[in-house]
Image (tube, rainbow, N blue to C red):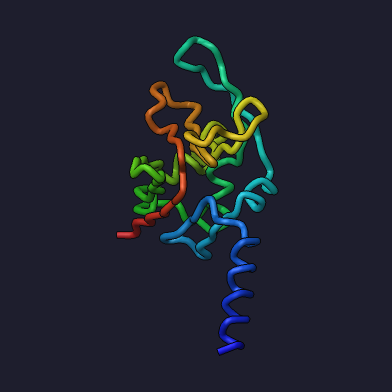
Length: 161
């Protein structure tokens, strides 16, 4: 009984210090991965400027979506040919909102994919609670409907048939 209490107390203490995950990448990937905020912050970041509804601009900092997927082993380059070109990534937010991106539009062999990023900062500051902790910025889209807030999950669907 005493040993069980000690183990439970140790587990509770460990859970208090463990960082919660902020993003999971799963599906048809070589190695599903879950990122903590610290792991995500340690990845190479870029900045993009996007127009705001009010006429101004916002500068978002984050990681290219293709680089996030690459950490999980999503197929880019030579494997992304033929029927596999119909493959996609489904991005899901905490509020249930979902959007898709074709894997080909994220592959630099097909087009410039530096305008689609998973952002953790806006104008040099962490995202506001109602926007983050992560969001997708689809900087090349004319209508920002795929720029989604509260991103929590990416699922890769690889079509082979």
